[in-house]
Length: 308
Length: 273
Image (cartoon, rainbow over all chains, first blue to last red; front, side, top):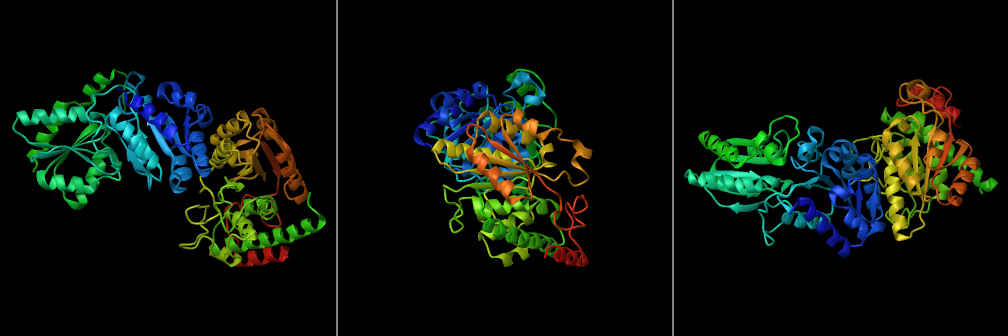
């Protein structure tokens, strides 16, 4: 299932249950599947045109009238152009607006660098009070949407376009700020956020074949990060690899380093894009190009373990 | 329509607010007197006479809302709010102090009655539209006011928001352009001219009214006209003088964002007697 499919389904369910849910989109309603919400609830759906700053500001205003707005657009433009609006009209103003960035990571694939968000959640992470959620797949996405609605505060939610392997289950617990322990291990901690969870699990298998016991933590909430789970795991394993479909600059790798450098310094390797822009290609080609595959993760784990 | 007595009372209040604007900026040693003095008639009229709000219940769901998009003009905003009774007048002299509720730019996290934080230019009209849309969904007849500056109208988001309000026919929105013709560095026309602003807003589907922004009667009539206008938002182009009322501040960019000295304060208070 495409993550955006999970997103659209959850939004429809939420709309049926809660009259205060309103949805805005920046003329990407067909691509983001928010047009389904619009068809069902025309009075609560606003195609704002191609105007990300205005989308964010209007959402903030709607929240003043007691609405819970989901503001949608392609992630780069919403978090890039809309940064100042998210910062001032939403976060500083303490508005419970849900900022939903689409085409996550490499999932816009052939669109190329302008459309590949590799910095989006890092940008959002830097804003005081923002909660940042990066679900692994469409199943987890549904739970994330509901949790975002229920959280009384601003949220950045990252949504992917292309189907990715389903790595979580319907009954996998989801609580904002709580990491999911996917696999226990003793030699190295693999911390993932977002779409690369399947690659990470495969990496743990590869490592097991080499006699290395990897623990896998899925950190769907990048902020606030689950410090307790992270420190407990690294205390046990003594080494860590961070995995993200995002730049290693200011992303999950940075968030994990922020915690560990203060609480439990440990060798860390980062799997993510390396301070470069994207380029056109299929999602598979891009994952290879950026080195975001299971063997890359396993090699990073070996390197981290060597530095213990 | 305002009675003669109401105009007289409002004029007294406006003068008091002008004096406090200058005193606040002097106290803080920083702030924005020029654009505050130009905007004060409209703000005082809205807060004292026109807006349906409950100061004892600032989050009353049926309230009218005001958004100060030109967020640097806090001295005018705060004096108008004090005139309505949101907080004691003495508190004005905590403006820009450490831990004050009267932050340099408006903060709803600090001061009840402020609905949205502003200070980064260009954002207020979008928020105003959103609040107006929420009221439309719920069938509330509240009104939504937003003041923007003419320098501020150089921000692209102003025009995004103008399209939103115009294309959606948000007749519960009334914006005020405080057209004092001067921005931080220079005259607006020397920096980046807005051209024919009336034609621009009309082109985006707005009802446009031009007034002398220092005439309380003109402004009040324009607000009435805005309320009576259906199917379109209203833009009041308020022609004002930057630094109005203080001779050495009038029509100069110098006091866009500068505090008067001790001597200058004395002169200003003398002139604003």
